[in-house]
Image (cartoon, rainbow, N blue to C red):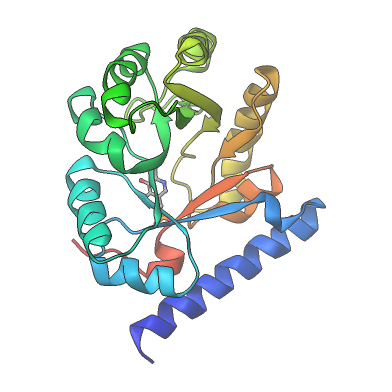
Length: 233
Ligand SMILES: *Cc1c(COP(=O)(O)O)cnc(C)c1O
């Protein structure tokens, strides 16, 4: 089996599992966007993913996204890039021109930085807003990025007031657990927070827990290993 068919068949399997989770929850699969996370993987894998029908791809590090997005563009490939990792302020200028959506807005300082950078990057005259999800550290783990639930309202006020941003929802990374059921309360909490703040988008669910996330209302899932295989390095 060539790697192209491996990616294509794994992608098909993931889509089927999303559809089954939707059926269990009485949801329309069209309401779930699949982002294929290509981190660590080379440009060839980006090409395979697009050939297999993926449109949305995710990266979590600026140092990897920028060269990969530039190489993809040079090769005539145009995925919609999603930035899903912590974005340092000093990397915002490099990353913003490439991304369709930012999943990890986590501080008023980053809101200010994007507001400062974005106008210069947009085509002249075009009102450009960056689609973003506010990352919430629902589980309160010290090593996790994201705003504490108690600070979400203030961050949302700052982001919603910015002409540079289009706040579409919330994002969370569930704790690493062996039983995906244990991620369910985190997803429920994120959905409750989004509902309380009138936000419809929910970026949640990865290889180990995307079905539970879909059952709990995910509108966009970020899946790497289940599509592209284990990451080496
Ligand atoms: C790597 C990563 C993913 C994808 O993880 P898999 O377990 O490979 O599906 C999703 N979200 C974020 C923020 C990541 O860093």
